[in-house]
Length: 434
Image (cartoon, rainbow, N blue to C red; front, side, top):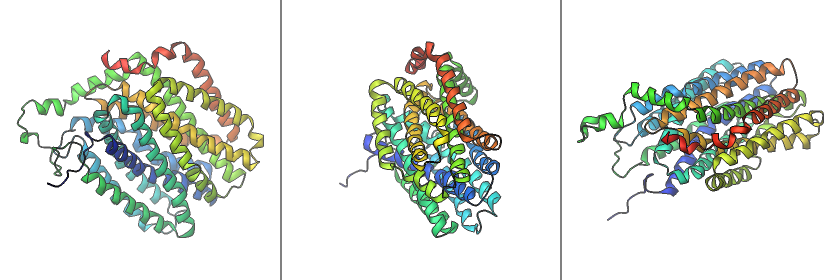
């Protein structure tokens, strides 16, 4: 009798591997568009406001993840496995959109076309992300969530590294067509891999979600909840006092990180005349192994000491980094100083996410976990979109060190105001029973 392939619900190793590559799949287009192409355009003389608008437009679909989350939770059942039909559909649609990039001849002159293509790609990528997150919350044991989030974030880091450094090199040495072609081939590989991976042993490879095939008459209501009930539960989970306290600080941190890195990157290329390809390679490859190792270590630490405590420590570190590093803006012309800033940022963002994601997962109520988590992610993505635009506008009226220092000061004020209730507000796991 031939050995059976493992399935996600039964194999922790398969879960780590699967969620790792699913996030790598998201990171590749993100690194290509937001780092490799954006830096390439800056190097060609495109102004800061245009670059900020380019990044913001690509990020807009991610703001509406709460809509995808509601639809995914409403129609979550499928013979393929809960929510898997959404994952496969969105991956295939995103692949078709990336193929349209093969028509681009001159990235600078066809910037609007590239922006529209990545905008449409982001629609399907955000659906895939919402589906993957909801699946992770539903099947990953609570004591494994810190590590699984570390693998997810590490996969994203690796994908961004490939998209930023690898595709920047392809873009500069071989042209846009070959960069787009390699991206399409990678997305095709991941899509096939997702299709053949089962969530449960009884799952089929057929995408049908016709519940009449089920013998249990109550399954339609329990597996595909009513939209009215779904939104009622979603509202209940979002407006809980502790939820608002916890998420408010998380959103502010992501906003500040978005503003800082875009302003800093523009300053390095436009003001300090860094080569855009060298910066993309540095942002994408620096210590990828080190960063992933630190991220995985952070996931283990989050499971041991609690993600709330880890998150507080990381927020304090990010605040200190902004205040100190931006106070030294007059030294940024020294390449070693600026390089240090790039490297430290490359560690700060993923470690914060490793701590923040389990906290947000713990806030999510049963049956609406997809909707609630994607609502949080939609607001985080809105912060990223706002940050992209604010950085473009800010660089036209002031300097990157001033912008970064304001970000640090904002985080410091938020920490002082929230410190009194911090310990209690991070006891997120208790919220599910409230």
